[in-house]
Amino acid sequence: MTLWMSLVALAQTQVTEFNPGVAANGVNYTLPKTLLRVDVSAIKVVYTPGEFAKYADRYLHISGVAAEPSTTWSVTGLAVSQEGVPDTSKVYTVKLKDKTVAPMVQLTPSGILVAVNTRTDLQERELPDTRTINHQMDARQYLTEDILSATSTAKMAELTAQEILDIRESKNAIKRGQVESMPQDGASLKIVLDELNRQEEALTQMFIGYADTTFAAKSFTFLPEEDINETVFFRFSRKLGFVDADDLAGDPYYLTVKDKHTVVLPDAKETTKRKIEGLVYNMPSMADVTISTMQGSVYQQELPFAQFGTIDMLSPTLFNKGATTKLTLHPATGGLLHLEQ
Image 1 (cartoon, rainbow, N blue to C red):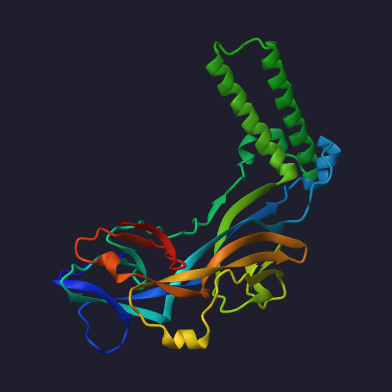
Image 2: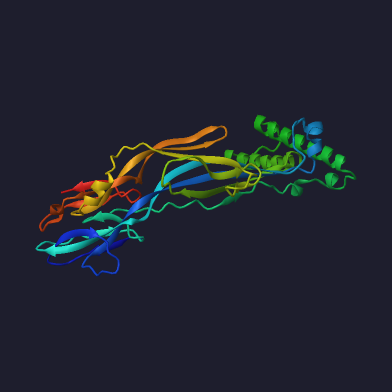
């Protein structure tokens, strides 16, 4: 949602520093500071062993089957983006002077200026919903009377393994056309083979177990006011998933932000003498952003940050009566995106 305003008056546009409590015939707007956002995607795998796990090697020659349940988390991706938050030191008022028309301005819900005399689409980034895929199958529906009446787990495992081998033989015989009642067409053949595959997979789960998979994501934000070097951004545990930044159960992900000083900042004397005479926008400075673990860097990119830069102004004549100036600003940095006259 954005705020869209039209200042209709007989006037020329004027921009001044915002003076709280003083009524002004205009619109107050804010320039942003740049917030760093990192959306972390992760997968949780919950393994449940089969009840015949210890017999998997003996009867099916499947080695390495775990007999104990386990939960394992892993990070699958980092999506880095930027958002704008109001900079309370950069609040201005679009006012009106005589003999011109005022512009239409588009603001974010927090009052950040994003467009003048045009509109821009603001898309809010949303995390995907957590979802779980369950892989457990109902194997007991395929157990024969002999298996169910077996007097020991070992015997049940042996008979179940033999059932699996019989299913495999049946599939091979069908594929070779060596059965008396062959399916009449390709569709029927597929139905038969699919059912046999389901039976085999379900019964095999009784030996090798199954793993349910959960896809999750969490967002982390940081507002750098100065250079930072390997501050703990978040922690992640292979057993617990996302944990608090001070929880040593998780491995740290470090954040480093270093201003490259791509914008020349005015000195104190220049700042004092600066007069606000046009529409104010940000000139962000570029910074190197690195996210790393104890094993090394997992993300490295150069990104703009409003708070490392300075401000500049557009000439008031751009918005004189009869002018068709259109302007869009970056919602995260307040920098110029597009200027059309």
